[in-house]
Image 1 (tube, rainbow, N blue to C red):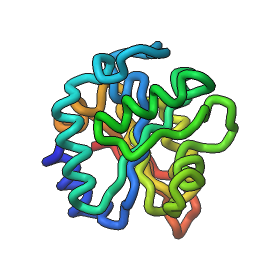
Image 2 (image 1 turned 90 degrees about the vertical axis):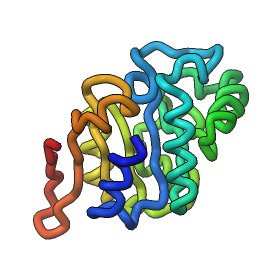
Image 3 (image 1 turned 30 degrees about the vertical axis):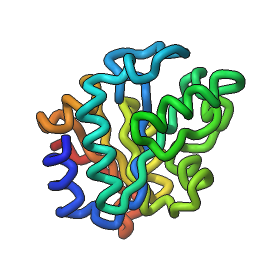
Image 4 (image 1 turned 45 degrees about the vertical axis):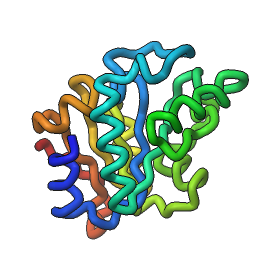
Length: 171
């Protein structure tokens, strides 16, 4: 995934300082992770670790912003510890209870402005909301990002600052 991200960051996303990753069907093969071993749920975790390391080496933090119940209540602390072992700087606390878009939640959590946030998610509505808020998003509808982004099977959501409309760019 690193070569694909390098290309994106070289050609337009160089201003991004934070990647906010969804979990279910974005980092893992299917929905439904609730608790237990986060690292065993993640698809190709070694490549994910390399990707997060590359991002970090280039001044870009990575966090999880998942509406999954595994990031709520008693499950939150162990889930964050597991995410940090994978290289993430943290995870948003219980976004499922918040109506705010994921880019805004990531901004609130980290202090990084929304326009410097890239959301990676398998839900088009989440990507649209992130872009409408001024961020950008990679939409991965065909399975884990670690596999689909290098294959070019994703779309970009960005805000056209002249028209105020969200554009979806199929790659």
